[in-house]
Image 1 (cartoon, helix red, strand yellow):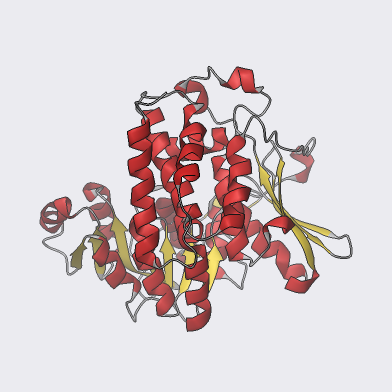
Image 2: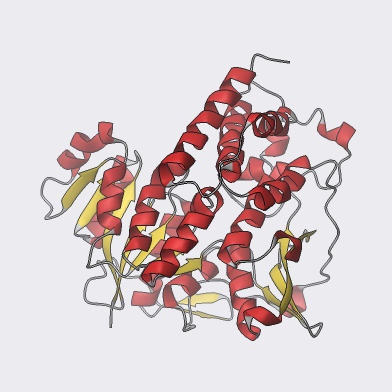
Length: 406
């Protein structure tokens, strides 16, 4: 039977790779000895194994229109309503329903014709849609951090109450999800998230004081957007992943560890009570976790490049420097605090990184601003979505107000 998919954030890196994966699955594209054979077809996916029902973008009208022409979805949404008329004009000859604003994402997420909602919407804009999909008992393939970071407690509770599932697309959490299949939840003693360490992993606190924007954007392994690359440089990305893991796997913070693994081959590990450690290995390629989320519980041949063990010279692991990378320590503290703390943590980081990318603050001020914001916040427990969004907005305002302060 066909799987009917909505991709929220289809024009970004994860969205585009998801469409590549679906093309390959529908075309029986096979990776053999890491060399691609066969050819991706140029037609849409209707009537095949994976059907695209809906696509969305924030403001990338041209790219969304191109995707709509290729995949022939029944619905498209543009979350920035200022671009609605332009998108209507671009797609005037197609039989497609065009939606606008965050409410358009919610409508898509609730469609009876959608089985899988793959969400890759940056920021808090897609939270309402993710919760709406959870209320409908959908299968959620979560690629962006915000749903589980900002609303992890609320989201996981909603999923359980409505019989849905969450499948992680993030490479580290996908690795943990796969490794945990080796035993029961009660047999897990700890989970270990791996981190590349970013470009500054060997630097002292003093060295980090004067790093430049260009240096922060020079990631040694992954090719990512500027915001995520800066998060890797501060290790904020790993701090957010700790919070995600806490909710996704219903795991006490004390059972979560982070280790630096610069080769980025071991994507994460699970240690069981008998001492066995199960790891998931692979090349740094997001197509593999995307495909696993779409085909789960099955595994099929795909386009991800295969790992060759004879090309691996070594695998190294080291403890992170929590003094130099204060963001990671804050992540563990926020995961313990729960409530609205993570919403503030995430939003303050987004606002501070925005200022850094604009050249308005130094690299080291990113974490300083986040910590100042957390210290001012009174955490609310068991928050509703509105309270989480209020905390998000409050944190952004606080960071921008603090920019002029020493």
